[in-house]
Image (cartoon, rainbow, N blue to C red):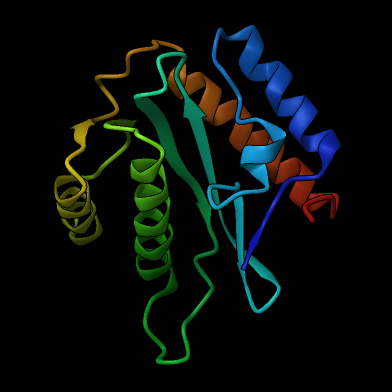
Length: 159
């Protein structure tokens, strides 16, 4: 099940991104398959922020928060599996929208990192690591958005 941000949250984050010269997803995008907050069994387990650049062929993505305590019924570690499922779905959605270039953080030495790289490759996307952001402020943006999300989650404002 995919859920969207509340309007107040969207406005806050949209304003923050605008100040940094980046585009936030539109409200209709937030209601579509690349919304920001995923949950399983009504429990929020992950938050993925997507920023599409003005030329729209590039997407800036980061998996900001996956609940490390979440476990699938098989008892496997939640973080890596959930991250891969979310990213696979997200990347397929972005590919269907014409995105061909991904800028995001990928740990190339980890098993999840290798799996993500193979997903990128199958979708024909080019990958950049955290040292190759086209916008130098991306890391700062991600940390600020992550902090905003954590605050909203603590206040119970994540829908």
